[in-house]
Length: 385
Ligand SMILES: NC(=O)c1ccc[n+]([C@@H]2O[C@H](COP(=O)([O-])OP(=O)(O)OC[C@H]3O[C@@H](n4cnc5c(N)ncnc54)[C@H](O)[C@@H]3O)[C@@H](O)[C@H]2O)c1
Image (tube, rainbow, N blue to C red; front, side):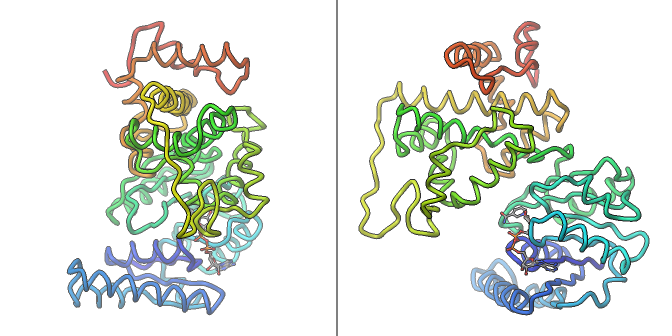
């Protein structure tokens, strides 16, 4: 199969690797020659390391190398049956690329986008045949992260949706279907992981090290929220939060925090600048967390119940199936457990009571309980039994 990846940055180079490993012939295209050079060098380094570690044979490496063709123009793109763009996150630039592509590719070529935040309906609308357009959202780093969110636009045909699902699965990925709404599944459901942690911190309830410790030690998350925000970059995380907040018509649930805005304005962006919530200088002393079990349990449960509420609301609003919501969080962001499964284990009534107690305390719609959880409590049902 011939496929084409447009944009050879972090995501595009990773997607090209995934496809090439599965035997597809890939054109990796970037309009900037230095981006192509960087992608090529990055690939060489990764592929050589895989051979050194014994994960690939020399012949396997050669097969993948032969499968990727690096270029700065669109030559031979007419032979591709699947094209995915991973260029800059800008709706106008992506739309104009789509129009350029549609004039070059064959009539039955699927035109996909790796966008994290743009509306697929608006991207599809730029095409003469919007039925061939679909969102295919990989996670970073694409070769290692198993999950891919598939987002049909309202214009996408059923046949294109099914062909895309089949193709991405054939690349060894786990697919979930998501409705074309802001943040799709993962970037929507995960908001409280950051937002509620920031709120607890702003209230002076606990310091960042204690909140992180609660989530890793009690919750079993791989990273605490502040460590993760420093890793992602506070500028990037703040922009995503602000974008989601606006996209949801200023729903209080997604309201950004001043703490993060100020850190971002100050240039305390996290690991990449050596300072964020934590100090990454070699001489810095890592702050210790409080070890009070009651406090840790309280922090963990307040963040978890907000995540569960978000997952339940995503199901209530038909963003995805319950299985796909749980898969998305465990495979896309490595949560230790699916949130709806966790809700069953903690008890639906316990979730509703906690959310109602928070709402009574704050009188903010941010803490409103999902109607689905409330109905389930009334009916005595669970998500999985
Ligand atoms: N970085 C992530 O964690 C992540 C995760 C999932 C999805 N995404 C999405 O993937 C896309 C790419 O993100 P990234 O992090 O790889 O960005 P990046 O900046 O690393 O790479 C973008 C590449 O696109 C190239 N480019 C820009 N305009 C182009 C054009 N008109 N034609 C051809 N090439 C062009 C740039 O030269 C650059 O190499 C974005 O839509 C982003 O939202 C990113």
